[in-house]
Image (cartoon, rainbow, N blue to C red):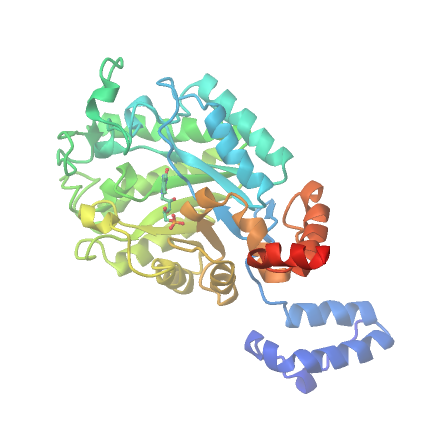
Length: 433
Ligand SMILES: Cc1cc2nc3c(=O)[nH]c(=O)nc-3n(C[C@H](O)[C@H](O)[C@H](O)COP(=O)(O)O)c2cc1C
C-alpha cells in the first residue's frame, strides 16, 4: 500500500518551507519510519525536503554525473608547438586539477582550424595528432576521478596574435605567421589587422569545422563540450552589431546576427552524443551594453536552451572596448548575469569571474544563482582549490586523494596542538628546563 504523506501537518507547500520545516520533517520522519511503508515515506520526505544544494553537491546533466559543482574554467596557455599539439606542460597543468578535486576540467580554448587560432602556439583539434594527444590527457583526467571537458573556439578577427607575454619578434620566422584573418565583417579589433569579411561559402565551411572538431572531441574521450561564444571571438563577432555589419542573412537584425551561432549549436548538438552535455560560453554583457543588451542575452540563451545547450557559461566582454577587460571591482561581478539567465530562461548556468572563496562559491549554488561555478586564476594559484574548499566547508580532507587524506587529517591534529610558530623557540626552551 502506498502511504500518504501527512502534507498538511508538514506544510510542504513549497521548497521555501524547507528551513522552517526541517525539525518537523525529522519528527515525522522518525515517526513514519516506525510505521508501515517507512521506506516510501522517507523517499517522499526526501523529495519534499531536498537537502540544500551547494558547491559539493553532485549534478547530473544528461548521462553525466559531476561529483561537485566546481569547474576549472578554460585558460589559454599559448604554449603548444606550432603544430597545435599539447605538451607535457598542458598535461601537468590540467591533471593537477583532477588531483585537486575539481568536478569538471576544461581545456583552454582549442582551435577548430589553423585560421581560428589566437596565436601560433594555441592548442588545436583540427588534426588527428592533436586530437590523439588531447585524448591521452582526457583519459588521465578521468583516471584521476574528474571529468574532462574541452572548449572549442575560433578567434575570427582576433586571430593571428601573440601571447600576452611575447614580443612581436618572438614569432618571426614561424611558417605561415601572420595569417589572413577572417570575420563576419571587415572591421578590425583594436591593434589588429583588418580581417576579410567571410563569404557565404566560407561560412558554410566554417560550420563543418565546428562539426568536425566536436566529433574529434567525442572520439578523444571528452565528456563535456563547450563552444566558445564569448570574449569577442568569432561567434560573439556574429552577435554584436559592432563587428557584424553584414547585409545578408547573417547580419542586420538580432535574428540574423544570431543565425550563425545558432546554426553552429544546432549542428554540433547533432554531432555530439545525446548523452553528453553541451555548454555555451557567452558574453552576457559587453562594454556599456549599448549594442548588446541583457535582454538580447536572455533571448539568445532561451534559443540555446531550445537547441539543447545544457549549460550557459555566463562570462562577459571582449568586443566593445578593451576597457571591458579591466579587472572589475567586485567579487563575483558576473554572478548576477548567471542568476538572471537562469531565472528568466530556466537554462542551467555556470557563474564565473572573481569567485575565489569556498563560502562564496557555495552560496552562489545554494541561493540558486547558478548551477556550477567556474574558477580560473584561483585554480592557478592553488590547483587544490576544490579540495581545500571542501575542507573549509566540511572540515574533512576527503576532497583530497585518499593517499593524502588520511595523513592530512592526522597532520592537522598534530599542527593544531602545537604552540604558534612564533613561540617555538620559547617552547623548546621550556621543554629543556
Ligand atoms: C590565463 C588565462 C587564460 C584564459 N583563457 C581563456 C580561454 O581559453 N577561454 C575562455 O573562455 N576564457 C579564458 N580565460 C578567462 C577565464 O576562463 C575566466 O573566465 C576569467 O579568468 C575570470 O575568472 P577568474 O576570476 O576565476 O579568473 C582565461 C583566463 C586566464 C587567467
